[in-house]
Length: 195
Image (cartoon, rainbow, N blue to C red):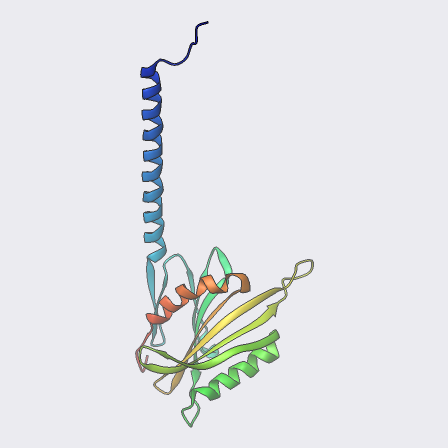
């Protein structure tokens, strides 16, 4: 009985081409990963009312209305619940940041459904003594949709008789993964008085 099969030479070429395909696929994956990392690390500078931050370049930035104290809002276009806002609040006459914290918490508690402060404590950013508040609330998604729990983090920073409030809000299931990006943005903050 004769056993027929591939000659040895064809098997060697077959193994060589499989190795070549695997090598090219690995190079393509590595190049794609490097490109993705570079795109995700690109930032745009946002400067308004003396507040300057670096936000991801792919995010949509909207500037606030002067009367509303909102400096700007940056939103991830692929995830509209993931947004970072900057708001200027007046400093209390005694100069305490905690007065603004209490007022903001009361304001949110009256407007948002099931608003709950999870944790609050002093917080330092670039040698500026501020205050951090972790919170959560329920956002109704409309008829027929389940409500979504939104978690947030407010950072209150006093600058030049003003308090700059930088906030992150995100769906509870993605909040932890959004924090590193928020802290990168927060680390880029600078304030120019009088603008």
